[in-house]
Amino acid sequence: MCSVPTLLLEAMDKRQQVSASDIPPQSWIDRVPGEGLRPYLRLARLDRPIGTWLLLLPCWWALALAGPGWPDPWFMVLFAVGSLVMRGAGCTINDIADRDFDKQVARTAARPIASGQVSVAQALAFLALQLGIGLAVLLQFNSYTVILGASSLLLVAIYPFAKRVTYWPQFVLGLTFNWGALVGWAAVTGGLETPAILLYAAGVLWTLGYDTIYAHQDKEDDVLVGIKSTALKFGAATGSWLAAFYGGTVTLLAAAGVHAGLHPAYFAGLALAGLHLAWQVRSLDLNDAKVCLARFKSNRDFGLIVLAAIIAGRLLAGGG
Image 1 (cartoon, rainbow, N blue to C red):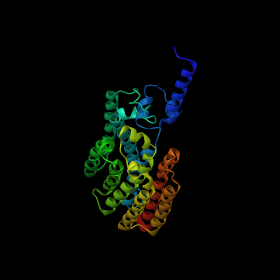
Image 2: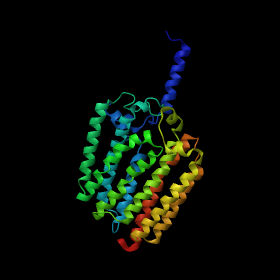
Image 3: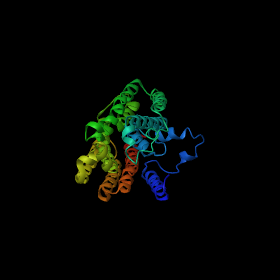
């Protein structure tokens, strides 16, 4: 029979696990009818939209950069839906692959697969549903875009395993998360050109920066379970690496604007975006997980500033 102190310790341990979890407490998902549906919504990370934003923004950048005037509203909606379901599919693949690791880490132990709320078979069925919706969205575009978009699935499948073999899984994530820059350009033009390649490269460096910041939340747990990351590789030198990644991001975005013939207003907006990135690096505390998470999430604002700059640069250049 458990003593009172033992019961108190167990209760405290459960509260600590809940507070350490990356699942937001009392989110809108908790109010959704149907208790059986909620684990799937959490598996797709619908209560954490930042990942969808970071996947979507390079798509919207490309639509705005490639188009003659305002980006096509219907294309923007299609890419928003596609980003939502494909981000969810990526999270599902990741959680299936990492289920044994997730059980060992307080931040991820409560995730649906790791906690047993969703079986692997159920997760695979849910994955098939998400991929089906993603395919339906992709088929709305030209054939070149369909082939290009479908080819990203290889990167989606590789990413969860990259952290087991390299200290650069953030680079693989960058290749994956910014594929939409290529797809967005192709959706408008039917092919690929230099501005799209520059935009894609800028996005890869951007992801290397923001996901290194994110990885600093987990560095102690990653060491314990044997997972690699750029946060562990860079250590105390992370600030210098971030400055290099973000500096390269802004430089490549500027080059994309030059090749696309954007108005100088674009470069003024890009300068503001660069200041935002400089603030991230300057104000970052690598040993404070909450600060790391806040700076990571602030990249949505950077992406929106860049989007506004591209639209302004295109419209003022006489695009419509």
